[in-house]
Amino acid sequence: MINERTHGESHPRQTNKTLDDHNILHAHCHEGQTNQRHPFVHCIMEVNLPLGWKPLKLERYDGTTNPDEDLDAFLTQANLYTNDDVILCQVFPTSLKGVVFMWYGGLPPRSIDNFNTLVECFSSQYATSQSHRLTSVALTSLRQAGNESLHKFMDRFNRLTVQIINLNPKVVLHSMLLALRPSKFVDSLCKKPPNNMDELWE
Image (cartoon, rainbow, N blue to C red):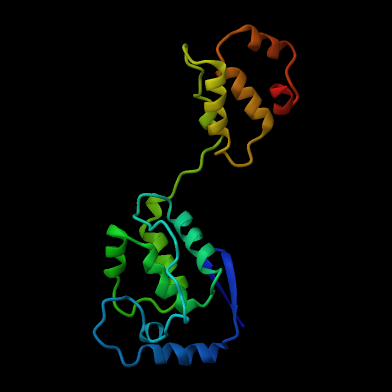
């Protein structure tokens, strides 16, 4: 049994094809090629979409945002209806637009024989669009502005902290105390520091 994955190490899928079956299918897919404007082997394009298939309601990817998020959104919707490798190959291009769709159209003929290969090409092409994850270092330069109210600063502070994965609550509290302007409120926190953020909000 071959263990396939559709996106990095996530979305694992199983197929019952043996290796011999896979090799026979691969050979068949490269037979009978005609002029084409897509990168798929013949056997992918000769399969019809399921009866009644409706276009997925997705914001089509234009290359300016994280490609992983686009791929996750596509698979989340597509897998509601199918996890068939051939159908995923056929439908994925409909989630692209602009220069990304032009990139897809420029892929070499017969270069894509499964969804994994398509995902690898897509992710490699748009790797530079991946968002850089924030770390706690981002909090070190944060400071409350002179004319900024405590409420507005805390709102800005919270919007930043929620973007940091596995952030230690003690680091959050320490960073916040450093970021706040000197005031009676800060003095009271320094004299009796809260044990956690819940205590602070109280």
